[in-house]
Structure formats: C-alpha cells, structure tokens
Length: 378
Image (cartoon, rainbow, N blue to C red; front, top):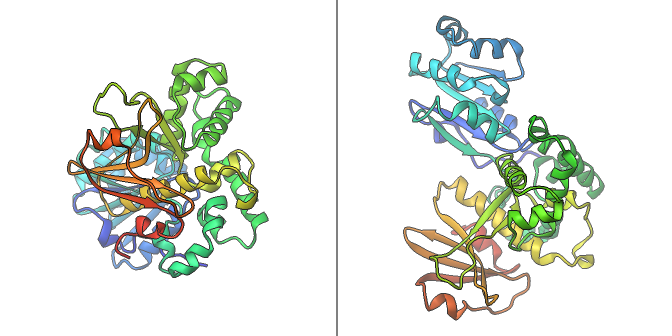
C-alpha cells in the first residue's frame, strides 16, 4: 500500500537559491519520498548516495573544478544519506556558490551528524524539513475519521513507521520494530567512539520508556544507571538528535512554587517505545494506557506543527503541590493549554495556574475528539 506523504511536490518545498535538507529517522521513507518527488519533476536531475565512495571523494576534495564537473549539465542534484560524506557541507557550499541556479537536495538519517557537517558551512544557504513516521493527517487521505479511530489501538501499540503500518500482521509488525530498535535507530549513536557501552544506552532508553509522561532529571537517571550526570546528559542529547526521543520542558516564569528544572521525554513513535520494553500486549492487558495516549498525542501534534511550519513553544506545567497541565503551546505570546484523557471526563485548569497566567483556550483531548487536536480544520 502506497501512502502519499505530506510533501507532495518539489516546488512546494524547494527554497530558491538554497539547499533543501531533509532530516528524519532511519527507515522512515526519505528515499521513497525523494523518488516520488523526482517522478513528477521536469528538471534534469542526478541522484546519488552518500554511501558512494567516489562521491565521498569528490564532495570532500574541496576541488572546485572536480565538484563543479560532477554536477555539470544538471538542473538538480540529489544526495541521499549525505551524512556519510566527510565535510559534506563544504562541498555543498562550493556547489551552491558556484552554481546558484542548481537545485540541491540532501537527506540524512542522523541530524547530529549531518548538522555538524552542514550547519556552519551552509549558514543562510539551507532550508531544513523533517520527515516523520506516517502522521494522522497523511493517513486521513486514505481513511475517514471512523476508520482512523478503528485503528487507534494499533497506532498506540505499533506506531506508524511505514514498514510497520503496511505490514500484514501483528507478528510482522513486532519483528520490524525490534529490528528497527536493534539495528537501525541506534546505529548512528553506537557508531560514535564516545558511546562505548551500548547496554547503558539501552537501559537509559528503557528508563525513559517507563517514565513517559513523568518528569525526569539527568541526576535521577544517572543514579539509577550508576553513571555520571554528564554522560547521561550527552546520551539524552544524542538520542534526541538521532530522532529516537524528544524533550518537553517545564513552563515556568520563575514562580517559587513551579517545577522548572525537570523535563519530560517522549518517543517519536509509540511502536519504538513499546519495542524498547518488549511490550506489545493489547490495551485490555496494559496498565500504561495513559502514557501511550500522551506519547501518541504529543508526537502526532509535533508532526502537525512541523509539517505545517507552525512555530510554537511547547511545554508541560507542574507545581510542587502536584497540580499539573499535560501540554501547553505558546504562540505569539498566547497560551493554549491541553489535558489528555483516554476516556471522556471533565477537567479544569488548576487555580494556581489561572491566577498567574492568562490562557487563550483550554481543551480536554480524549479518544472521541482527538482528531480535532491532531488535524485542526479537517
């Protein structure tokens, strides 16, 4: 089954006079997206891979003549897995500076690797987009609201990685997810010399998987793992930049009763979270529905905001009296608060919060109305 991605044409995402960088986790469909985009272009293009040793030599040579000769005669150059090319940013800078009309697309599965090689050389010369596992908005092109809700339990348990979503049965889904965790998602991190203990990294992921929706600190994680705080902080940063997890900070205006130093960590995909802890039971046999629901909603909302280029600050809020708000968005100085409930129940904002802050709107998101939160206006 082919699922059309959010980005449907090169013209809609290609910046003028800049290089387009497409980030995203491994196996999320970046190469498939490229092929789909190129299928409809009228430009004369060349597509190559960062795994190509000859291309690595050319792009990292800093030889103006050789680099320009490589792209000569083409209107568009596409490099997949560009993070595998040493000093790729410098090579791309030479190309765009020498050939301002040449359109260039580069993809990378590891944002920390690719950004380090591209960031500084291409300052002001690039536009970045991130491709995620299938979003509810993308799937809504093929299913109506009723059908999406019918599949909700599958989304919560197995996530929406392309291979997982299109697989034939649950056993196949499990096998793909376990392969993703064991062989692909952590590959970028474990390949770094600084990560010498894969077991510690995996144990950290397990702790985070069990703590979804709860506040954690690097110090608490370090104590549980019997390693130093600096190592935990570095591993957390790497896991974020490798598109495994993302962090939600605490909302605070430095009031004395607000929790400000802890964070919440979520997984980009529910299936990956469940694969880390080897838990694929149906919802009837689980005690973590609240965590699954919260992770799903926030990850899907992140996709919506990213794809629609909506720039907002995202937080949770809690004070030392255990009053909390699951999710807050701050746009143009206005606050939008959300509470996540699996079942349809009432909730209200804590008085401690409303006494201090003006809230533009407050919504309770449950399994009946969640599509309005994930696909506003649809």
